[in-house]
Image (cartoon, rainbow, N blue to C red; front, side):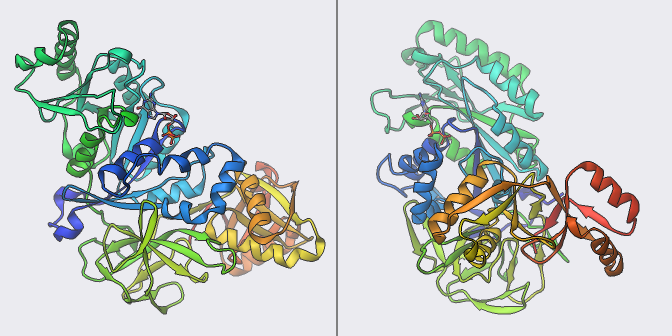
Length: 534
Ligand code: GDP
């Protein structure tokens, strides 16, 4: 269990004001709309609509590819920094398509908290549930935004109950909605005793906020019709009796989530949520690493790569590695040690991402995300330090659940294909296995859509049409053990053996039976379904 903000020594103010988080949601719940309003209030964009174009591009595969062509956009959307009041928010984007991918998992290793967006009419949907489970593995604090309250939505208690039951987390209301659907007026802010009224006429207008002295304040009646006021009082009374009160420590430990109700498209409830992220969201957290944990207040800089994006400019084959700073104060030009290769690396042109632009990062602090352009030296899972041999842990690579053989449309282009595949493997977009026997490559993914995206990208970025074919194999396991035991296994099972893109030994399986047989016959060898990125 990592330390939490409250039992650690105070962080330097520049670090303490950082909030690094991701949004988790089911497609269509309003993630893009909410992101846009965050940026609007963070002063990062001038006008609503700038993020929208991109959100919509995620809907279909061809649009997705179109977006991918414009790599600049998808890159700057990977991490967005903006200020809100005294806080610096770093919002890390989770991939938009609905296939669960490792990319999503790894993104969540780079944040300290998540904002869970649910649709008030639909409640907890499948993708939200999956992403929530991933957050739970790391006890990430979760703040909840129940969106689309301007439409017919479910009963407030029902929504809260559903979250408590399906996700097994305590829910405490931070605000309480007044009226539903067409009659939705706004919310009663339970944390600050204010009435927030939604303006339906102007979607970008911040809600009118009225200070109230408790539910018996006569001012309420001036703004809320009698029948709604009656209902509000009853419900709030019940909520106070039945639901837990806000416990900031429980929020930081991931056992309790505060919920705000609002309507992102009407800019309603967004500022309260942002205030909540600032007040109840965690400061940059310690990072697990070997041989020791890294604390954000250490003066020496360290960070780890959680994402690599290649081919931003197809002519140059450059890549950007996204580095989450785990500690220290980084300044441009700093020489860091690339721990895996022990080589020094001058970071002279790091970038920070602001809504639609990137700009040179002159400095950055623990909690920030910077992009480092490079030519392939930086891989997912790599650690950079000021010299100490530290290796950040907890960034796994999963065994793929779907395998296919891939061939170049033109057999003479096999070498080109190998190069392209290796690059995508480094990006973490797929696993690539080279079988010991036979030609071609086997590509493994976690979600089926990844095959299509991969095929289109190879064609688009490398001008190589490819064919995917069914493979007899269904999964893969990494092989570990004493050298001679591994060799014995390899020699006796050549038709199953392959090397992954790092050259590590992999056993390709058809059935669970294959795995059981190896476990039985080779007791000194272990097969694992995940591999720590090295
Ligand atoms: P994403 O898939 O989670 O990124 O969702 P989007 O932000 O693209 O929103 C999905 C749809 O819901 C879009 O048509 C939005 O205009 C709409 N939407 C988002 N927020 C609200 C809201 O507060 N009220 C209503 N009525 N519609 C909303």
